[in-house]
Length: 324
Image (cartoon, rainbow, N blue to C red; front, side):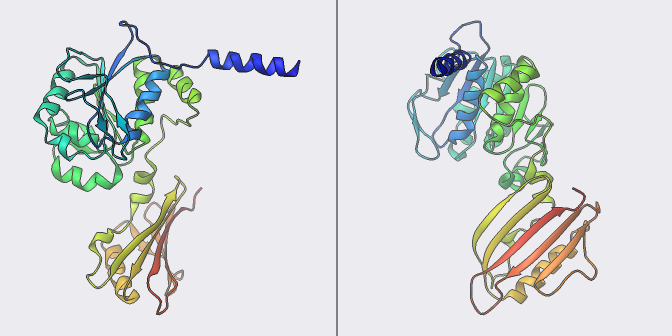
């Protein structure tokens, strides 16, 4: 009897799940751009969201031929640019974007589609592709954290937003890195339908979606993280040990090789140039520095670990929200 009850419940659960996207011509139709080097999660994450929302989905590449994703996954698109498709929304994933950015055919396809599409959504550094079309000029956008400087340099007419997972300009929506595409896709569902439907889709795919949530790196870690690309010549960057956290705390550690005292002098100058941080009085010792942020909430702790004749050694940054 118990087995029968569980089987019945399981059947009910499966009956409520969407196993394929809609094929109805009346369904909201989304075109997902594919190209060699596209990041898998950038298009697969939104694909799952929109499929669960029961939208109609079509994958598109320039010639309709099989593409190889950034990590080697091969995908056969549904159609090509030559086919007469007009979509309600277009998704532009990021990844290895250099060739895509230089393709006149690809950029023109986006421009043509955007004339009638209700929405155009870029994911991660797919924002660079969308920006190259000129369609984001005078608007605000975001992209993956590691590309912030490059984006600002290459597209000065676009206002870069660093603390949001997605930025909405009405028709044009851009998202931050990787899984942020899922957040952007859920947000698009809320615009096309309702916030309740978007939350239901998030629950179905077991994704903890916080619509009003910010981009953790931009809101926390990027308050101050020295650019290790500017290290003194005598110091060698070995590796990043880890980088993780939340809105209350963030931890990043790097392996470096070279004279610790040179790094201390270099870092001290970097911190002096940032008006938002001040050295904590009476809290710092030689191998552990503490800074107070101007908001009187955040504390930055810098640890110089395993200081001896052994190289490499570890430089660790901890940002803590002392008000939490």
